[in-house]
Image: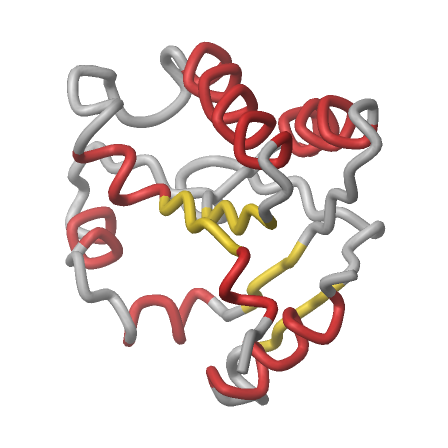
Amino acid sequence: MKTKLDNCVLLDGDILRETIFKDYPHGECKREEKLDIIIKMCLEYLHEGRHVIATFVSPKFSERKKVWEAVEGKQRTFMEVHVQASFQTCSERDVKGLYSRAKQGDDIKLAGLTEPYEESDQVEVRCDTEQLSVKDCVNMILEAIP
């Protein structure tokens, strides 16, 4: 049985940071250049008729708007998913140790903690991970894919 996921490609921020962007600094520096590369990758997959799931922390509304404009301008659908969790919950789930390092004073750039996060009011799917299971969040996202 074919599912919506059979036609999806995942662009994971952590994987891209370790591969394509390994020589780029983390944080604000070169963010615009990296975003342009990600948009080109998304458009190529969309041109092939695939759904793209891009998992990135995008703290600025202007960045999300730029992606939306690039995708919608190509007769594609852009769907913003906001995965929501409190600082406390993120700290408890901190598998990379970034929150504990930031609390200890290391120069770590974290949206919502050391950098501002501009929340959008135009989110198609909002997953409150303190209230919903991973399975519930995945189902919400899949149901929203046209």
